[in-house]
Length: 280
Length: 280
Image 1: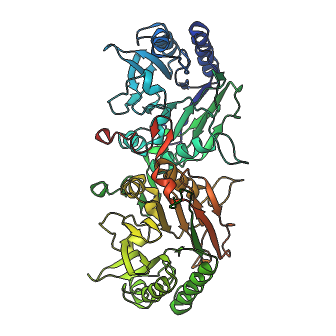
Image 2 (image 1 turned 120 degrees about the horizontal axis):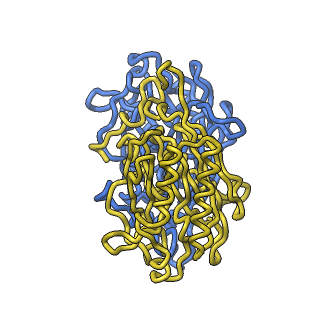
Image 3 (image 1 turned 120 degrees about the vertical axis):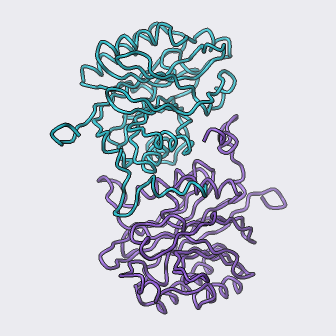
């Protein structure tokens, strides 16, 4: 709510990109160009996919390590500069060479003051287990100039416990960089149906808006859904990508973040107060 | 799997009825007629809605109490007789006058040996809080001649922790009697979309099939979705009701219950083994 009591929305951009594995410089430039386009469109929170600079389908750990960067490397440094110059929040994935020598599937959050959080994916998908060490920390929830923002990565979203944890920590928006590979879905439904159902249910269970920046493109035999989506606190999609492996695009949605602080869904029901954690 | 290694399915029937509040004898007869029809259709597990004999929209606690029955009352006795005669499992809701003097929104499970479980709804919806005492026990998971069956009721499904608990206890099928009132959904989507998303996500997170018996009809100003649905272990609907307030019907689905014991979803992922409960 603004000072005069009217509702205020925050513009979120999900930049759906098609990185090319091994072309880090070009991929990085594409993320920066997307950030500029999102800012021109009025976005205050700009999201990038999981692993948008390194690519995803690594042949082996050696290749993954060669494409990794530390959080003070060129990618995060460039994103931080853009965040400071435009007074925006940037959330994006990073193939991280961590200080402890491990390789992490990470996501960083930057605002005008610089790097605010590094989250390391806690639930690893399939071959990621060959390359990455899973994170052992809770998903961060960060107070930024543009809202209180939670973050997790892709397969993390399939664990309702993890979404709940972010919501209970007070997130007003959950930002999830993903790389959703094409999965079989029943005929006559959109390719991202399964992925979207999980996102929508996570939002509904917590009255928590969720913004997902997916990737597009094709990489070493893997097709990506291109299923970026933003759902509101009730779980209804505000905008979703026209799914397709060639569909690079920037989705724009205006979200009332303050609305998500209200967890009431009926006269006598509140999605958090109704929990009975001593029974779980 | 059968002895010869082939896949075996179990036929489940969700009886979507339209009880009339205050007409308990007629409502009870309708449940018994539906059980007979389901048996004729080959069902081994027969589900009835939440509160199918009492109705739902009570004016006050006195009315609710007047429509309540103990678990040795006429409704459960008649269901037990049908379960024994046909060697089936019956799961159905009951406005229960509990032994401790409280009123409960319950669900019972019967097989050929009689009453196997009484579950008392742990998460109460809206005005239910004025009439019912919430249950304090975990959702039961019962080994029956027709599979290992979990049970919960309606709003319980909106708590992923509760579905998880049933799945971790080894349920092969989750049976959920519900009364889903009509809720607003975005245009161009089916009326039960929100409710189905929650069910589908719960199934996906656990590779747990879920069968939902909803009610139809209109009661004191409340329209019911008529959204009965059966989803498989991957969360995809096997069958769903043609939603509508007048749509009484019996949904039939064949489910491979043994399949749900396999929690693997990729070469290296298992929806339960991938959990990191010490972080939750």
